Every structure is written in C-alpha cells, then in structure tokens.
Image 1: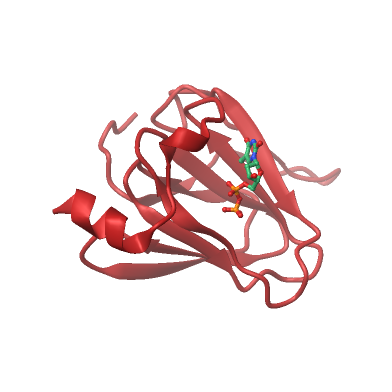
Image 2: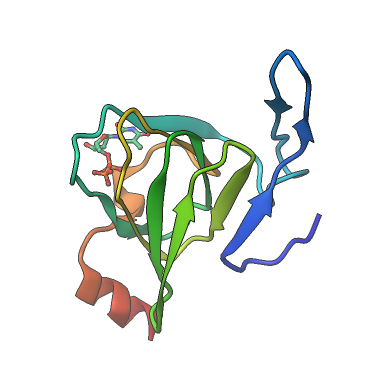
Amino acid sequence: MENNNEIRLIQLPRIPDDRGNLSFIESEAHIPFEIRRVYWIYDVPGGEIRGSHAFRDQDEFIVAISGSFDVVLHDGTKESRFHLNRSYKGIFVPRMTWRTLDNFSTNSLCMVLSSTSFDEADYIRDFNEYLNLKK
Ligand code: TYD
C-alpha cells in the first residue's frame, strides 16, 4: 500500500458478478489508515452543503455508496473538486484538509471511513483559522 499522505482517488477491488457486483475495503490495505469509525450521510435535501471544516488529526476515506456528490478540497493553497459517483472509488482526505460536500443527487449515500473516534475538539470550523494553521 502506497503510504503517502496526499489527497488521492483510490479505486477499490471489484468482483463483478451476474448476480450483482461486490467491493470491499480492508484497514491499512486499500486505504492508508486503520478504520476507527464509520459514518454516513443520507437524505440530503437538494442544494444542501455538508462539511466545510478540517480535522487536526483525522484522516478520512469518502465513498459515494449510492448516487453522487462532490467533494471539494482545499489544501491551504488551492481548491480541487472531485465528483464521486461510483461505489468502487473513493477519495482519501488526509488530516488538515479543508473539505466540503455538495451537489448531492437524490437518494445519495455518502460513506465516510475515519481514522479516529468522534472528537469535536479535532474539528477546525473556521476557514481563516485553518489557513493560519497551514502557514
Ligand atoms: P459534522 O461532522 O459537523 O457534519 P457536517 O460537517 O456535515 O455538518 O456532524 C454533524 C453533527 O453530528 C455534529 O453535531 C457532530 C455529530 N457527529 C457525531 O456525534 N459523531 C460523528 O461521528 C459525526 C461524524 C458527527
């Protein structure tokens, strides 16, 4: 496993089958961290935006299990937008990345694998504070 800390799209294993396809993720094998928590975002009303924060210590892997949405990432210097619309492809978001989720399709399901358990103190919710910390 490539163990770099860069933002990147990761293609997951896919077992195609006439009965339906299957994909999977193993800690530290397909993603570069040990999974401590899984959460998901669903029933997002049209036009809503989620996220808009960074994490001090948490690494994440985000997959559109169903439907589609955009992951907008700012690394302190530049912004990139990634459209996720496959259940076998996700994006690795390293700690200290400002991230926003938008453009959710109807019935989309956003699954997030996290390297930490929930800790509100890990959040940076002010963009200017984030930029200052990145300097
Ligand atoms: P938050 O991460 O702020 O979501 P978003 O950035 O998309 O608005 O989480 C929303 C609320 O849910 C917030 O009050 C914290 C709570 N929460 C937990 O209690 N546990 C979790 O694992 C997560 C991700 C959120």
